[in-house]
Image (cartoon, rainbow, N blue to C red):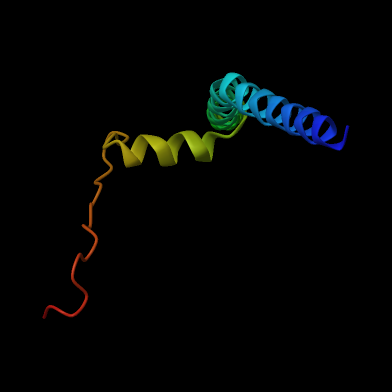
Amino acid sequence: MSGWKTVVRAAWLTFAIIALAASAAVFTPKWREYRGYQRKLAEMQEAERIENDRLNQLRLNQERFQTDPVFVERLAHEHGLARPGEVLFKIPADKDPERP
């Protein structure tokens, strides 16, 4: 009888190992796919956050255009526009501070 117990235990152990290997073979690709979706979701959420920041900045600029004449004048000067009789000087940034 003890020989049969050993055979039955070995059969159950073999069955358990085969079941674990089969479940790993089935679930591993799905797990990788799930992780890929998580990465894509994180990238999309970051892109959404960046776009929302950009939208908020544009809304702020729109409000400032309507209420802040100094802001409008500064932007106009940055784009090379001047009032009649004004002279704008553009000073380029020094690219190499150690060059004489």
